[in-house]
Image (cartoon, rainbow, N blue to C red; front, top):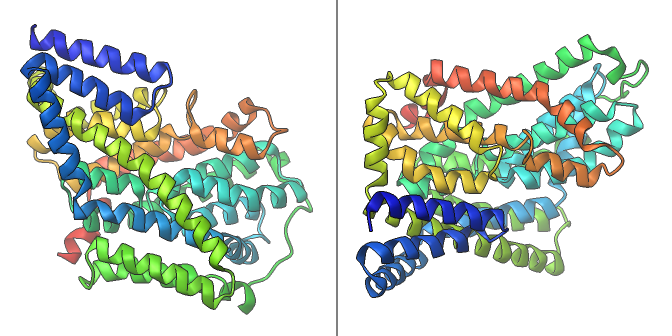
Amino acid sequence: MDIGLIVALVFVLLFVLLFLGTHLGLAMSSVAILGTSLMIGYDSALSLAGLSIFEAAQSFDLSVIPLFVLMGCLASRSGISSDLFAAFHSWLGRYHGGLAHASIAACAAFGAVCGSSLATAATMGQIALPEMKRFGYSDRLATGSIAAGGTIGILIPPSVIMLIYGILTETSIGDLFIAGIIPGILLTLLFMATVVVIVKVDKSVVPEGSIAKASLTRSTLAGVWATLLLFALVIGGIYGGFFTPTEAAGFGAAGAIVIGLVMKRLNMALIIDSLMDTIQTTAMIFLILIGAILFSGFLSLSSTPSMLGDWVVGLNLSPIMTIILIVFIYLLLGAFLDTMAMIILSIPIFFPIVSGMGFDPVWFGVLVVVVVELALITPPMGINVFVIKGLAKDTPLIEIFRGVWPFCVALLVLIALIIAFPSIVTFLPELAR
């Protein structure tokens, strides 16, 4: 059978399986084995798949994933999210629209110990939504700011998406983490600027007299020390060259346990719950990674990246226009696929093209993460929007999507800035080398 026909068949079958609700990892594994079988035979395909799975399972580099997931689970159960919101509420709550600012800032800070957008949105939504409703904030601003703020969780390090990108492309995870700091801070400021614009354009979203009378106190600031300590331990250790990312993840998980015990917020039952959540999340991620490894092997065997690279070269686009085309494709994919599926399916195809043009893999990784963030709040998928909908059951879904669209503009601005000024991403990694 012609290789082009085999590739087309595999992609069609993959999207059919995803449409039917098949797990992403199982769908990719099955179609990859089928496609490889059609090219080299059934027995050889199974042997190659078994070898690939065995090598992936014993890879020491993958141990970084469960350790960072465990750190996030422990931090969440230690009440760090509540402390962060209380501190930012005390600082920003007295300003017009201050609770929305506080929610976004708390999401960014919690992302420094979590690494998941969904977990960040769900955790902060449970804390911030009732407060904003109590002070009369419109449903549109309250839900939109938290759904958008949750996306920062995968840009501020540590980030599960960055981990997967680094593993798939063999890019330094430490460089990726450090590279996400400045864009993460910049995105937080852009989101807060968006709130300022929303409040000025439509004063009804924050009624007069809804300003929280709070002040910056020692007690509220004391709750932030746990986040600062964990962030300094993990990112400072990597940036300073004291730890590898895997070692930093181990120290971060251990630090989260110690902090929780010192604050008297963790007990054996909560630690066991955190371990069980980590096992479930890690098993899900590993199943997807195994599928990605098999699917990537099939693509390499079929020379699909090379064919696509030749097609892109044939378009005679400049390197920057090629990046803009890839970003546009990601925006289209985001309307139909979840974030993990976008990364897993696209990186084996786009990364060889981008690296072949001489672009920095760390820069491209951060750019991809920011584009994926946009997919988290755009219809029809918009997973973060659905997470917030689950918390704000009385708010119509369309109202939440209306609330996030100004923040989508802020994300597009950040994408444009990263493309126009790559040093936003590359400055800190280059400084660390």
